[in-house]
Figure 1 (cartoon, one colour):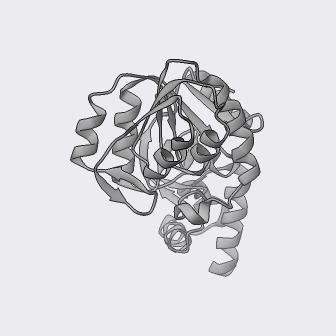
Figure 2 (tube, rainbow, N blue to C red; figure 1 turned 60 degrees about the vertical axis):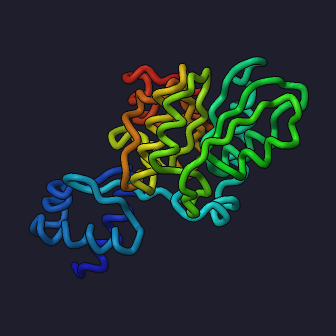
Length: 249
């Protein structure tokens, strides 16, 4: 079998099984693990999978720049946002992460809902201007243009002064073994810090994020109190959430 044929079959297996192990692939194709690792490196370089220790996971489609992501699974994001907006109660302090699903959530807010919104996303803050009953706290820092959010030491210092009821976290990957992941190291650090300052962390999972992974770990699934999805999760992800005490909405 040619290497190109083997790589196509690896992608088919990954799509069906949601993860692959180098040792198992070596036995399946009767080639050395070095050959399999080379295949995985080349596929990762093409952006077709996410390498992890011992194998690979499906790569998330949610790591593109913000403008590009607005057109990815827009129907799924709207469905998730409709469920998420019902969780916000009057008088709460709510942290909004950056991201396109969060934008959908803000767009669906009732005009008569009074609460305090905290965000490190300038675009989310601007979108909240149209809601006069919402007090908006914008966390400053260095602007990360890819996701249009602030990061850095000043951001983390401000986060540590907040005690919130809810945090709507954006992620790019949700996987039974890889947990919650994102595409940038500093973003992962900020998301962990925000989760630590909220009584409950809610992850909004549009369809392209499920059973996929990105390079940087935010934390295990149990970092979330709940995951909101458009459709029921598959058996493996549902079981992982149940084992780690994560509610699925």
